[in-house]
Image (tube, rainbow, N blue to C red):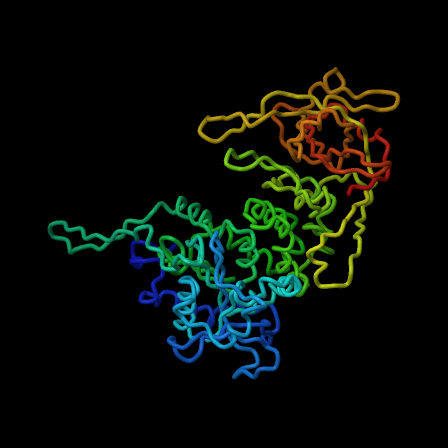
Length: 541
């Protein structure tokens, strides 16, 4: 492990004058990292790029590859990840495209963009791709077409520049809002002066890094995963990420793995293990669901570039529907609404259709995926299939979320829900807080009998219900339970450690249902009761 005390961080987070660290990381990656090769054909080029010209003082020109000749048919370029913020950045529009092709004076370019140009010059790159200046912002057709190319654009770039600490394009890459690590001299009698650095607690710093403005954006999740190399201009220091290593100014060679779980996560995607890893995607969508979107409709679109890249490399888990992979069915259906944060709005579904109710993408809330990965367990669903409605053969159809339904064959029974009491969440060090109301299944209603969780039949059953949203009418709806699988779980002082996991559904028409939540039942004294539940075929929309 590198000793951070041996390295003195720069005065600001990556000023160009102290850019030797960045240049060393960049050149070291280009020259020595075999795993940091482009995913796609190196001859690829985006539809448009910003030409930074031969001298920093020259106007920047928008170059559209519609017949214009360049010095290189596949120019080396960088990309920029940035926060738009409440102030609109300089944008490419149908009304100013010709003007931007003529040239953009440097003094009219937002500060973050201008500093990204300086970084490109420092690295010897003449071309730069910025979403707001390389995609027509007033053309749905152009936006949809370019959105489908995000996988190519970011993975083919030489480096992705992250304005990680800035809230909008008028901020700065070289953020000095936080003081750099303090440098001091210590003198003891008979001992030469010792130079040391006072550094922030490593674990706390890695947590605060993940909470910086850029990393709260949903679109940036796929940009980080797609980019072969990324340099973060964070609020206190430079952070380097590539497919081989992660480094910071405090750890300039390599960040300890325990401090940088994202590095291990990205490597799980770009290797054969992704096709065999039952948990990689569910972990990703759990983290992704916590991120922010300016437009709710983009929830699936903002991951489409990553999906395209995985499909192009053959690293898939079967077909992909509404944020889920075929190989993860039926277990991935068992996502649940995440814990309630007082700073967040209550969970809800979008007013306009975005995804089927069985997909995590149908909910405006962080989700929890601990129940949703169980390929080694015992499925109670014997058959499943997905039907996708086809839309018009237009690139704009990507924006129109066409219905997708899933057909299952397995147990399906009517259930009654009861209020169990206040839901209490542990928040650490023995401190708890009440987070709304908790629910459980009161009984299973059958034609000739009732499985009552309050009588002697399953009186020891530990069960929990998590509704997807906070619609109070859920308690009076005719509710159905669809067991999906059993899994082993250690339960103290229990003779049986099996847990039953399933979906809560409401019937919208005969045989067709909509998901309203999920349930978990543990410590089942009579497991044979499951086998006595008749299987039927049903559809969830």
